[in-house]
Image 1 (cartoon, rainbow, N blue to C red):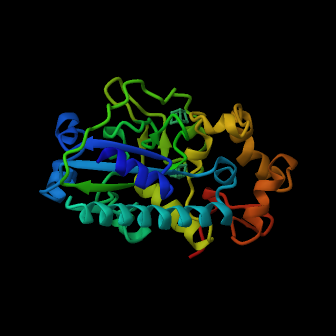
Image 2 (cartoon, rainbow, N blue to C red):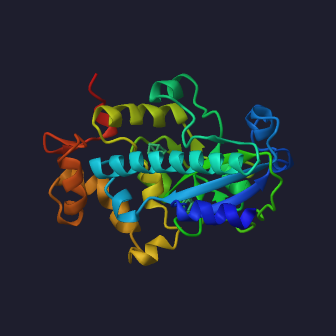
Length: 286
Ligand code: SF4
Ligand code: SF4
């Protein structure tokens, strides 16, 4: 059955697929029990997590119309993939349901209550697809954090995958340095693995990007050096270019290094407006 599921999902566009038993949630006990699969659906025995890559040259342009449209496409593709697999399993006599790729209806929902109804990130960790990084994103060996996820819950007891032992996050702090809203902070202690994140501040930044037709941000996913995709696109050492970007564009919006990325910010969205790239400190339009 597992082989058939992998074949089905791969033929419909899944780039990575992993299987987690529902006992992984209590075993790791990292998120509140009300978010565990068995609390959400008592029949659940296995969670199948599937991911689709976000191509690096597109993520590089964020915030832009190109990134926004690709993000929207990945959402539609993921939901359609999970919906299809759910129906496939149901027809095979295995009761199943799925959780769409985002568990919130609007940015306002996140500002009111900064939690999605289900975490695909932790599900992917428990399904052996990657590790949860200091920036709170899933990191995968293939695409770093440039991957979007969806999860199918099934009553079928399937062979599960091993959780990845090696931490993929190398603690380079590029995500902290480049966060435009300064909501990801290098404040950790010996017991606290994650960088401090202000989720409401991140959501407010997204609110403004939505008004500018350049949602979502994803700069923390763009700059992360982890992922074999960097080799495919020959973008191995981009840290200097990423670190200098905001300052360079504040000084010269036509800086040649960022010309092609800026094209998708100048046209089709308001990420660049009045000859300036939107800067968090300017405040947004009301
Ligand atoms: S940018 Fe560096 S610190 Fe941030 S998640 Fe990636 S590897 Fe970890
Ligand atoms: S999505 Fe953007 S604003 Fe939010 S933490 Fe990542 S870099 Fe910062």
